[in-house]
Image 1 (spheres, one colour):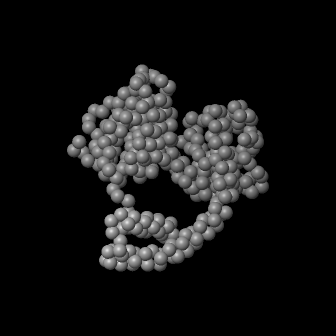
Image 2 (cartoon, one colour):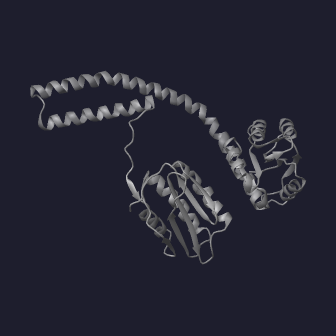
Image 3 (cartoon, one colour):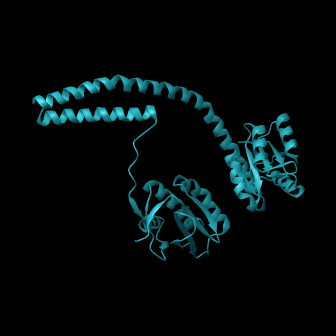
Length: 341
């Protein structure tokens, strides 16, 4: 996708000059840059001109933070917005993404390659969102028709099922149904009842509570996952890991993201993954992942990559993932677990 024009909203002259210079040597081709130094100037530019993407600093003379993001995202409409930030403002940058920004870039790590990749990814994601929005209204309309049809089916079959159950009871009492015939009729009745229950869930949006998940042995799961990554890697457990109660598929996906990205982030070099349970003030389960090997410990960009890839999987389980002193910390506050293993 070809990008021709970028709006840069940045009040620091050095950073603005750096972005303009990088935009002339991007691997994907040069991009024209219009610069503004204030929120008011950025909003005015977006009202008057058409841009392919907006690059926004989170601290401007006339506005800052989420209030600034909201104003620019609103003015940009369907133009993707990327935010520029520092390490100290990463939480603010994540909040900006939740408010409609496409991504963030760290000023201290800005390179032509990183800028080019972020710009084009943002434009592609925004294009996908626009395409998805085109289908949402028709799908919602069709979904409403299906819901009404399902409700009619439930109502239409409910009364006949009650009659069937009544005759079934009479047949059992009178001895007219017994043996194989009785078993077949009872099985058919259960299938019809289950089908109606499922349709009722679709109509009402409510279902019976799911049974609690089985306890899973963490060290067994990790040993299996690391073994699948190749014989050059190994798992180190300084102490026993607990059993946890979680959806096995979601937990496997999370641990696979963490272990796979840590161990394979530098190619095929041999590495060991050390995983330990840590007691902290935070409630729930806290696991620390450390990786060492022939090429040393993962650097900060490698750890950031793991966090970026695995964060959504951690959130599915109600947790969070971050880097801390060269290691990764996984916190699952709602995770039930057993220490006596």
